[in-house]
Length: 97
Image (cartoon, one colour):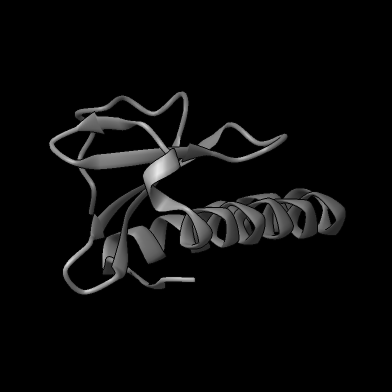
């Protein structure tokens, strides 16, 4: 298992998505949190299994939720940096805080 951390902006994206679901349903928010934790667990186990989408950035898609987790894997440090928690309908060039 590799260590991981969140880019500060990715952490904000993740928290805001969770809070959005929480305002609507605790069940949906809990499901989102579980899906996020499962995705992070999987990428820390075998980060190389996920496709590179751009400049060494890899993507894992959350189950049942319209989000992807984008991450960088630094093999020299055995560390993963989560760079974005991205809603599938968000415009790719939209400002990130």
